[in-house]
Amino acid sequence: MGTGMSKIISGVYIGNIKDSKDIKTLTENQISHILAVHDNAKELIEDKIYLCIIVSDSPQQSLIPHFEESIDFIHKARNENGRVLIHCLAGISRSVTFTAAYIMTVTNFGWRESLNAIRGGRQCANPNFGFQRQLQEYEQTGLAEARLKLKEKYPNHDYEKDEQECQQLLKAYHHYLFHGDQCDGKNCSDHDFMVPQKNTISKNESDSVESDSTDIQ
Image (cartoon, rainbow, N blue to C red; front, side, top):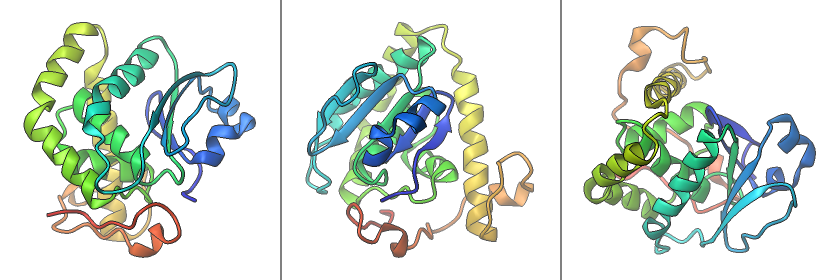
C-alpha cells in the first residue's frame, strides 16, 4: 500500500497505515503529530498528538468541512517545531487530498499545482475524482478567506519558504513527467518546469489500494 512515508515540505509527511504504527520510522523522521484520515482513524501511540478524522475513500465523501480543522492542526504543529504525518490506508487518496488543501492554503498554488507538487515528493499520490472536485471547489469558494485567516493567526510563519519548497517539488514532478526519472527539483533544466497538458500517473500505481483516479479536467 503506497510507498512508505514521504517528506513533502518541511514538517509535513504523507504515509500509509503501516507507517503510522512503525515506531522506528516515526522516530527517525521525528514525527510529533499524526493526522489520521480513514474509516477507522484512532489514536494508537501515546506520545503522539493526534487529530483523527473518520472518512471513507468514496468520491461522495465530503472532506471540505474538515479542511479548516486539519489545516490548523498541521500549521500549529509546524509553528511549534513539530512534524506531522498525514496518513490514510494507502497514502494515496485521502491523505493526499488533505495535504493538497494545506499546501493550497500556505502557498499561492491552485489545486492542480498543489497536487502535482505532492507528486514531486510522492509519485503514487492520486486522489479519487470526487476529492479532486472538492479541491477545485475549495479553490473557488473558500481558499482566499482561509489563506487570510491563517496568515492573520500565524503572521510570523515563513510562507515564502513553503512556496519555494513547493516550487522545487513541482519542478521535480515535471522532470519525472517528461524524462521518466527523478530529480531533486534543484538540478532540473528550465524545460522541465513546463506545465504538462495531461497527467500521466498510471493506473497501475493505484491497483489494490484506494480508489483509482485520473485527474479531472
